[in-house]
Length: 113
Image: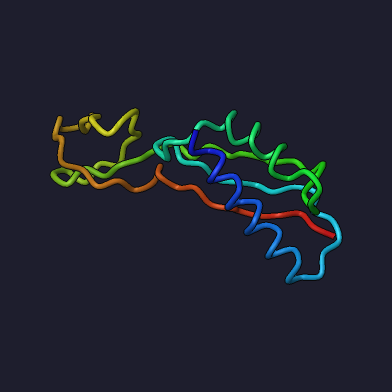
């Protein structure tokens, strides 16, 4: 379960950022998680509760926004949704594509006081 290590990093970044802004409480942390990021959102939520105990994050909400994967065909320049990395272009059938988004994993925003 690599989500534990990822969550520990998220908590560290959130605490460092909040402390740097003299915050006394963190209400929420919003994450963008790509469909191809290789993490399980429910596991992140489970780990977040444990990792945030006895910190400024305790009791805060972890909000996960899932980002669908998209690709652009190298042959016909069509943008299309990716179900997985083996999805071919729906317009021309080409397997040659560039990933546009879907591997993202980042803190989008935090609500602090």
